[in-house]
Image 1 (tube, rainbow, N blue to C red):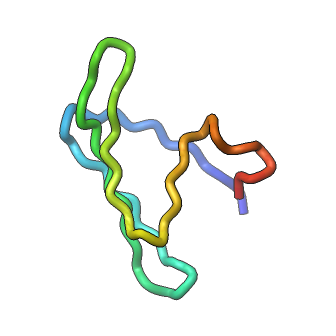
Image 2: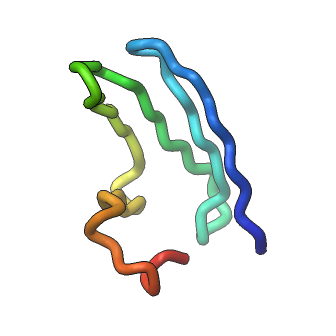
Amino acid sequence: MSNGKLTLARKLNQPLYLQFIGHDGKHQEINLMISEINGQQSRILTEAPKTVSITRGELIKPSQII
C-alpha cells in the first residue's frame, strides 16, 4: 500500500472528517478541527473512537509507523 499526501487549508473551527473502515469492518470516523491559533502554534481538537490511538509524531519511532 502506498501513502499519499493531501494539503488542506482550514479556517478556525472549520472541521475535517476522516472516515475509514476499522478492523471489525465497521465505519469509523475521526473529526479534526483547528480550535486555536496563537502566532506560529495551533491547537487541534481531535474526536475519535476510543479504539483509535492518537500519538504526537515526535513520540513515535520511524519503525513504529504502519
